[in-house]
Length: 182
Image: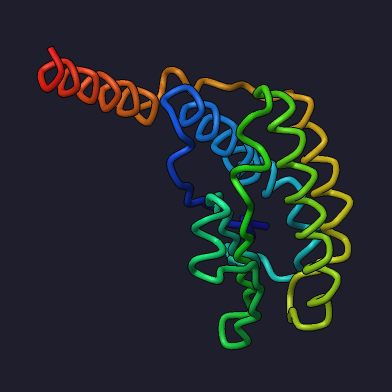
């Protein structure tokens, strides 16, 4: 029946190369597996009546340092766009609360916090959708999140262009520092 969910992220610098790589790797793994078209297609007939590719949920995860959040007075929010029959969810996550954990624990904590917030918002806006059953989506999302937490899906982050760019940026930074401080 179609895809119904689009999720992306924005993140801030995590303090060093290793933490930056870990942060991006974990968050990309989460969003890539929620954006998975085959999964969405396989469950969309349980959630939508009309056969179309319509984005009912548009989600952005923001991982920011607590200082940036406080300085900008930033907070999570959700807004239903009636004209588009779409719920926009912008979740603010405090990077400092995750970055010092090992990758598996970071993924688990992020998944838990993402699911708790999404569940709350999906329940709150359940009556707004004209063609999306947000309540039926909650257990399906919970099942998918559990698989993500358990690292059940392929993870090829170290083969991606994102990792190659991170690595190149770190090498350039070291070269500049070596030239400035011989």
